[in-house]
Amino acid sequence: MTLDDIFEEMKKAQNICVLAHENPDGDAIGSSLGLYHILTDMGKNVEVLMKNVPETYCFLPGAEMIKEEPTVEKFDLAIVVDCPDLKRVNSGLIKYFEMARVKVEFDHHMNNSMFADYNIVNHVSPACCQILVASFDYLEVELSKETMTCFLTGIITDTGRI
Image (cartoon, rainbow, N blue to C red; front, side):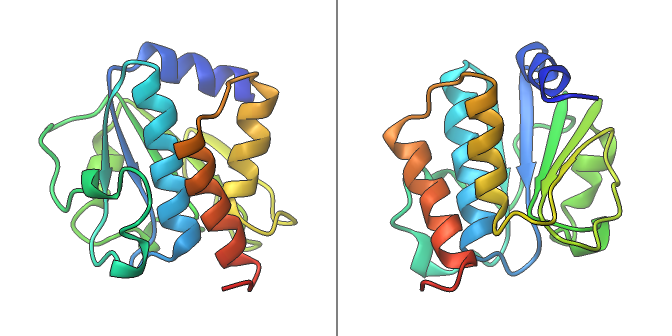
C-alpha cells in the first residue's frame, strides 16, 4: 500500500465521497474540501458528506458543496479524513464508507485504528491537512489556490493559531 496505489484508485473511481468526524473542526473541513477540489479537478464526481458544519468555515472555497445526504447510493471510493476510528464518523453517514468499493483514510491521531483498505496515518503530523499537502506534493499534483486555502485553514486551526 503506497500513495501511488491510492492515487491509482482515485484515478479509477468516478463517484467519490469524503467523510470526516462528527462536530467537524477546521482540519476536518479543510481536509475534506481540499480533497474535493483536487478530485473535482481530476474530473471526478465528489460529494463531501458532513453534518453540523460550523458557520465559521463557510468562507472556505467549496463550503456550499457540503451535503448532509448523498445524491449517489454507492460510491466507488470513500475517503475518511481526520478521524481515528469509524465510531467518530458522522452518524448516519458511515454506511457510505462501508459500502464503497475502496476505502481510504488520512489521519494524524495517535490512537488510529487503521480501519480502511489504505491507511495513511502520521501521528507526528500536527494536522491531517499537512499530511494531504505532503502526499499530493509527493504525487506531483499541483494544488490550486482554493485547495491550499482549505489545507492552510486546517493546519492553522489544528496548531492552535485560531
